[in-house]
Every structure is written in structure tokens, then in C-alpha cells.
Length: 176
Image 1 (cartoon, helix red, strand yellow):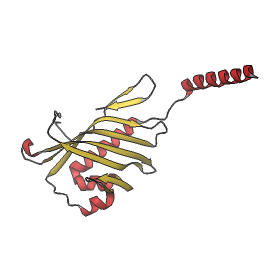
Image 2 (cartoon, rainbow, N blue to C red):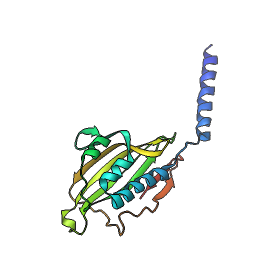
Image 3 (cartoon, rainbow, N blue to C red):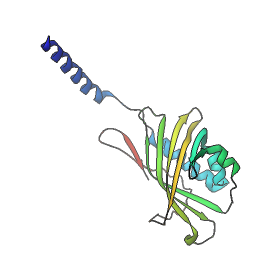
Image 4 (cartoon, rainbow, N blue to C red):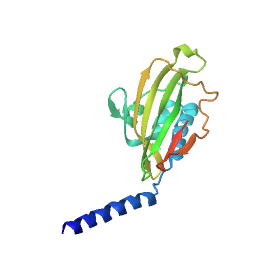
């Protein structure tokens, strides 16, 4: 009996180990980076408020500073057209089923035509959910901090694709 149990455990362990190599996750990290760049593009052409209203999911949560309903918050806010937002994606990842992902990086908010000394800086994390209409932001969290080294883009709304690489485990990683 003990031999039979040991044999079954050995077979299960081996089949589990061999099946790992055949599993191909569905990952499209570039599409989530493209969604982030689309957000930036809308923010540059139509304003920050419009970008959030077009990007957030109906059930989204944003932290300002505590959790609030995202669409309600941005519908009630005003958007000075002189404010510009630049977000630099430093990391993005998508779940193996391709339905959930996140982007993170640094942000810079500044006034058009004003000195860099009045700019605000911070970090953000956005959780994205794949819906029938495409990627929508379901959670957006940002913090502010003093100015850190942040590359000044020649065009803050340049939607050029980020570099993509594959890790040793076969998962796609995207960095900007």
C-alpha cells in the first residue's frame, strides 16, 4: 500500500513538473502600456479631467488622498487648462489570463509656460482591467514627493512604445 501511494505521488509530481513547461500564459503587456500612453495623450490634448473621465471604469476607485469613487470625483472637479500631466511608465505587468494588469512610474504636474520650480512630482500605480471596450483603470493611487531625477521628455505625450523583454520564466516585462 505504501509503495502504491509513493508511486502515485511520484507520478503526480512528475506530471506537474512537465506540465509547467507547456503552459503558455496569455500576456500582452504592451497593450496596457499603450492604454497608459493613450491616457497621457488625452491629458495633453483635452485636459487631465477628460483623460480620467475617458479612462476610468464606472466602478473605479481613486485615492485623493483616501478612497473615493473615481468618476464621481473627476466629474465634480475642475480642470485648469494650464495644468499638464506627464506620467513616465517604469514598469507594467499583466496577469497570465490577460484580464488584469498594472502600470507604475513617476508623474510630474506642471503649468504650461511656467518654471519647473513650481512643478509637483510623485509616483503612481494604476490597476487596469480588460473590459469589452478595452483596458479601463479600476484603481488609481498616487503620492507626492519632492523632485527626484525625472527625465524631462522632449514631448511629454509621445506615445512611443516601451521596451519589452521576456524573463527567464517566460513572462513578458515592459519597461520605459
